Image (tube, rainbow, N blue to C red; front, top):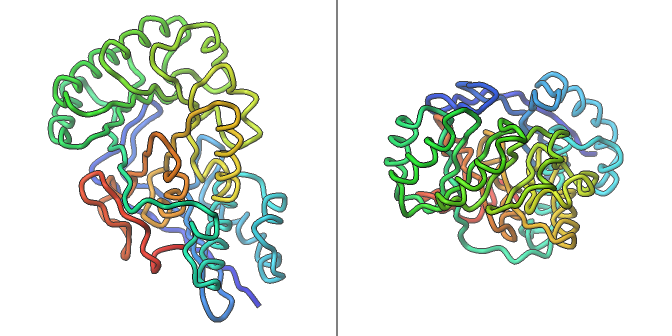
Amino acid sequence: MRRLTHTIVALPIRGAFTISRGSRTETVVVVVEITDGYVSGRGECVPYARYGETPASVAAQIEGMAEAIAGGIDRLALQSAMPAGAARNAVDCALWDLEAKRAGKRAWEIAGITMPEQLTTAYTLSLDTPEAMATAARKAAHRPLLKLKLGGSEDIERVRAVRSAAPDSELIVDANEGWQPDQLPVLMQAMADLGVALIEQPLPAGGDGALADVPHPVPVCADESFHDRTSLADVIGRYDFVNIKLDKTGGLTEALAAVREAERAGLGIMVGCMLASSLSMAPATLVAAVARFVDLDGPLLLAKDRRPGLVYKGSTLGRPPPDLWG
């Protein structure tokens, strides 16, 4: 009989992590383990207050699945047994890991994905003054892709300062819903002039209709406006890309299905992450294998990652080791 357990873990962040909605010095994850008495599968999720989640509420959802897990529920049935969100993500990824271990295969083989030996991830610079962000960019100028957290009155100055400090890096900017509709024409054109490759979630989710009415000199990516396949109708015509995060989709199973439907709708794929350890990043690498933009730098922003973890060499990460996940 299978048994489900969970653990709540606080992970210190290196320094502080700041976006338009606030700053923090630690992230809290919930780790799920499912064992069948022979092998165990693990998954990790990040409860996110933006979506009304807390560690306690996520843990309660997970505990509520103990009987179903013992009864042998599979990943497909899990999709209707739990709502999309962090709790289902951890359980779904643990089932993937368990399935891979029982089959003696890697998770990407089960998924039918050709997994590259290496992936290149963005590296995130927290929201700060233009001068401070330029200093951070100068230290990270060797990285091929930088993601800048924006959302204030000095955003053009911030990007200009970073561009000057890291002239060879490709740039993504993420406003985290911090811009206003009347700012779009000026800000989007300024981003184009500064060579930005992607603008992530400029307007608040639910208030982003103006994106359908203005030119996109830079492709625009939905994050808070896109959770899973049920969100697709809301983003078509407004966005050019979707940011697929497993904590939003409720796991790898839905994430891979969302990739297929988004691509059929003509949308580009970005894969993102919450601030978490390598155990959260590992399943997302299967989405990264087909994504144009990869943002799986969570472990690089922590004071200490779990061991074993993903191996990062600068901004390059390798395949998940089998004793980590999948």
